[in-house]
Image (cartoon, rainbow over the protein chains, first blue to last red):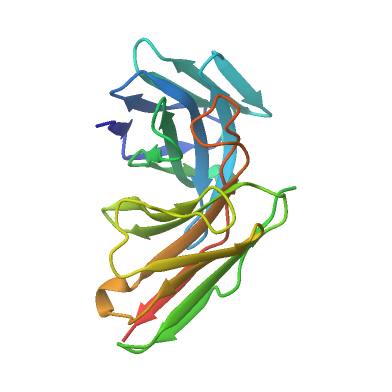
Length: 113
Length: 117
C-alpha cells in the first residue's frame, strides 16, 4: 500500500526566506506527483504536476523536483511571502493504481512579517 | 482556466434527510471524483467516475451514492444523512483515461461544508 509522508507537519519562517517542503512515498512506481496548496476552509489549488519521466517543474517562485528512485519530491519556495501561508499537500498516482491518488499528510506553512 | 463549481458552500441538514451535493466542471474532463476531508484523517476518496454513467467505489463509499448523467456533472447523494457525515466535501476533475501516462492535473472545487444535526 502506497504511503505518502510530509515532513515537517508545520513550519514557521520569516518573510523572505527560501524554504523546502518534503514529500516521501513508499512505492516508486508512480505515474505522476502533484503539489497543492489549501487555504483554511477552501478547496485545493493545483501548484505543479510532475510526470514520472520528468525531474522537475517550475512555476514562478515555486520549483518541484522528483526523485523516483529515492521516493522523494521537494517543493522549493523562493523568497517566501505572508501570502504563501497555507497547507501544502502532495499526491501521487501509482502505476496500475487506476484513478486513485494517494495524498500526503500535509505541511502547514506560516510566513511571518 | 479550469473551473470546478460546487453548488453549495455551506449546508446544514437534519439526520435522516436526503442530501444532494452537485459538482460541475467546464473543461470536458473524463474523470470526476468526490472526496471528504476530516481533521486528522486527510482526504479520503468516496467515489469516482471515468465516464458518463460509469462509477467506481473509492475507499469509503458506505452511506453514499453518486450520479453522472452528463459528462460535466457529478452528484454525490447521501440517502439518509447521519451526524458522522458532517464533513468538508471536495469535488475534483481531471482529463485523461485512468492510469495512463497522459493523466493530467487534478482540479478541485471550493468545497461544500456539510453539517448534519
